Picture 1 (cartoon, rainbow, N blue to C red):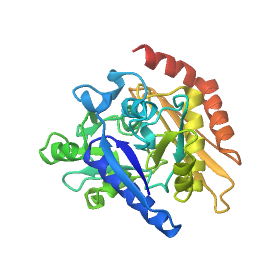
Picture 2 (cartoon, helix red, strand yellow):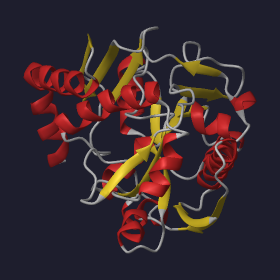
Picture 3 (cartoon, rainbow, N blue to C red):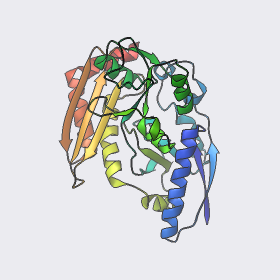
Length: 311
């Protein structure tokens, strides 16, 4: 029996989803005659340390993964469990995403006091979000709302809503569902209303290239339909060279055959004044993502991105 050391952030959500992954790996391993032992190592990232400013102001890419990836490269851990939406489009040399499990709900979740919906939230109500992507789309959809930054883990954000700091907040549905808190969701926000983050709802199991024993185990847990959808979204992100400083989103789905991917991509200004959105379909996920990214760049996304990065 080989023992693998697993790196993860130390938030309640990160630990919960890591433990869910490890239980699934143990289960699928047993079915194939593989006994697995894991040790979880908690790693604090830059994004975890800096909580008093918005992510867009912290700057850089990989705010929630760099320290974990360094531990991988230093062989302090064998693999990492990440939220896919935290992963930059390009990985460090020698590291790969070895497994993409089946995706949870990729949509955003609207959570409100007073039984309000996104449509009935009163003019001037305070809406909290940690994401420029959500903020941009909400300002475009409901310019009458006061959209304010909300950082912290899921628990602390929900507490701030309960304490009356906000009238409503937006979180990822997937995190709430993994925590067993789906009953807290007032209503999901459909992807055609607010385009999700690239990879939202999916996980990434990152490891070193060439770890064949680990990759053999991962292959038993890998979900090809999710991987194809995420590949299209990440190729779109890579073409736009996007990060948390710019409002960018993408959402891909596969048809019943699993061959044709439909991808919607979005780029907007932080103030929500201008949103660019396109949808396209194709049979090669990465090529589709690159093509859609180039289409939006030609439509004016290049100027939006350049302006956002200068701020």
